[in-house]
Length: 366
Ligand SMILES: [Zn+2]
Image (tube, rainbow, N blue to C red; front, side):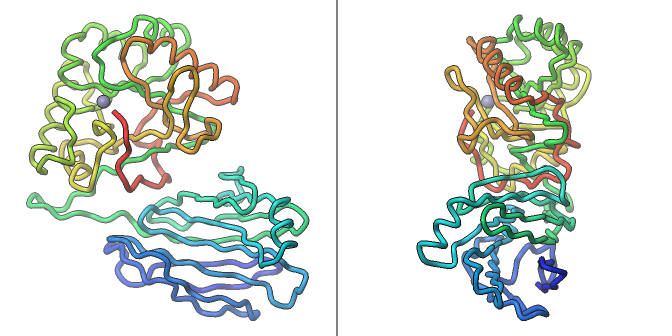
């Protein structure tokens, strides 16, 4: 990593040394930049494929400064975590309590905003350089730009050659305040949902279990005609992480082929049952012809939308529902929230994940 000072702010460049395809990172190899900023590397965590580097930044020469920014790039999850810390003492903590931290990409709208002291984790796209504008507002404003270069996703070698895994994403493109409605399994189709789609052109993705879809083919044809998108939710809904690569590939591929045969288009997106996945499941999906896997960040329980962080539904979130009794009511609840938050349901496609950080760990759900 190296650092430059530009004006009052600082530009940071974070780059992995060595072969990026190995996704192994040196930890905290920082050099002092010009201008006498104090920094040191601190190893925090080295996972199987991930390292975490933290740079501690100070502003010597300004004795009034009691807040400092810390940031870390986690290659395991392709996220940058930014945090404001009080330099110590009661006054530092008071200052923190009345400050806000905003992180935005390339100066575009705020990606994450949080009372300072809370961490802000921002996904950055792999294989690209991203500029993040970090601003603290409050009694002691701070403004810095981080430039982070995340490595490209790894390629996996299998007996059939090199396959780039179909990565799983829990968030999608937030542009235009988009949110994404996905409905899983397919055992109980809903005439109410179909009517709503026809009336309002509501974009919905149905991740169908092949065995469930087969029971209601005329419904799913009408769903596609109404603008719905079909996704692959396997043949029989197993936990794919318990299967071999060959078995997992067959679960994706057979369902994909059958759905394509029955409904006109072979799915390009998949969703692993229970949100359970690992690298084998992602490679199996790619071998079956899927381009990406969709997780979720929000669900509907009772009469409220439950997001991953307990905060209001946010642009870019993927909501999961199920084709089950009560779906119509849940969708009504969801649409009321979507309206209230001025969000816009959008179709989910592989392009929706462009520039989004993939998920690293299995989800818990169905
Ligand atoms: Zn399911």
